[in-house]
Image (cartoon, rainbow, N blue to C red; front, side, top):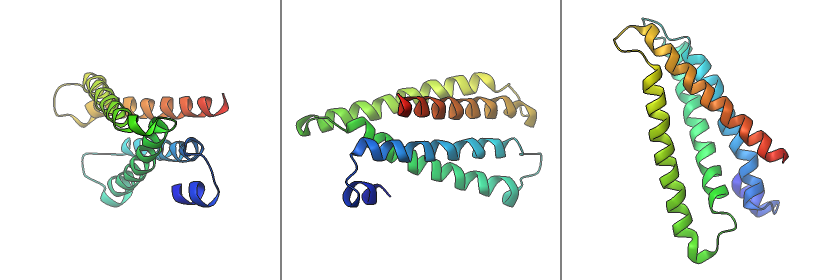
Length: 138
């Protein structure tokens, strides 16, 4: 889709990124909603496999759009620096998100202790999607 929009339709990279990023982020929302269906016995076909497919699709669509958006408009000689800063921010943001997620999950091994963590991930996905939609309208 990225090549179609940029090379054939002549869209700017940032325009293509705005189209792909919400699609990727939207995939995370049903993924985490499905995870609320986890139970004491693994449900491969009803929960685990569909959630994994949605998570993978969301990640694949959003990471490419983030990379394009993060390096669009940067001079050729600064592309390496921009990509490095983007990757560093993804790592730092991921570490901070993991800290919040870990704090939300209770200690122990009871299944119910995982649900607040799933709620946190769902909240992250919804907030990020809303921020992107607002950014696209602004």
